[in-house]
Amino acid sequence: MSYHPLFNSAEAKSIKEWICEVGRRVYNKGFAAANDGNISYRIGPNEVLCSPTMICKGFMTPDDICMVDLDGKQLAGKKKRTSEILLHLTIMRQREDVKAVVHCHPPHATAFAVRREAIPQCILPEIEVFMGEVPLAPYETPGAQGFADTVSPFLKATNTIILANHGTVSFGATLEEAYWKTEILDAYCRILILTQQLGGVTYLNEQKSRELLDLKKRLGFDDPRFHNENCDLCSNTAFRDGYKEGEAPQVSAFAPPPVYPGYLQTPTYQTNGGVGGGGGQINMEALVQAITEQVLAALKQ
Image 1: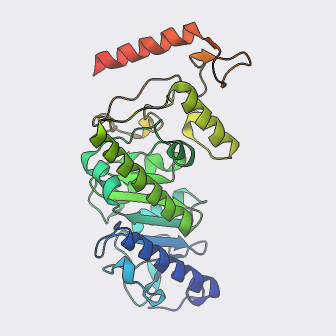
Image 2 (image 1 turned 120 degrees about the vertical axis):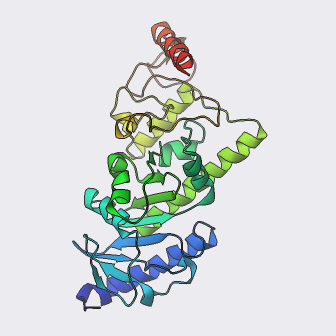
Image 3 (image 1 turned 180 degrees about the horizontal axis):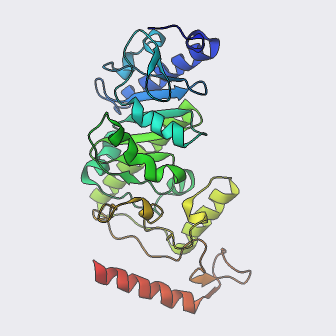
């Protein structure tokens, strides 16, 4: 393979070691059996380090890592680059802030992918603050650009995507960030499955759901619910414009989520100091509107 100066730089050496470390974590967690999964990191304007094809992520060494350009052409490395690199590159081309991408098959999250079940919201505080709604990209045969393009409608507003009948892809500014989003998602999906076995989930009420979004905003994290007036707090609506007709995932294995006014809309409760505290007087007009929406939603099921 042809020589590239970045490939043997001190920075590249450090990143190669990090890719191997994330590979070990993915493998040890059971997120990637045998040769499953792939990991990448953008090290230059047009240069990306990535795991090779047909290798167990738990046994990679820095010497195994490849380099490709943003079109997928291999620039350096003894082994052939991963066959699913186009997914990673599509994300990087559309999101300049993304440097690292992790794709794998965490079993609990992949169970949702196989069932094509929407992941319910307004249940666990950490998910509301650090993740938000997780979209589900439609199925396409892995490997080609058509598969990579399935994530494009959702890239603007999330760093974590479930791939229907396949697995997950998560991404961020660092390899650690990209990896821990996968870990958070799979842990949450496991909690959901276990809770369902106990009898079902309990949704947070409107006030507590809104308080978590207030906290998220104060911490400096973005969320589609901050910008879309018609985006419900809990009903998996942030990505509805990205789905083709009939493709939007539904919450069917769990109790239907409550219908609350969007974050930018008037809540159904009101405090002496306005919106967001505890107790206070009920906003009757908003309450009637919310009940009406719940009834209409129930009639459509």
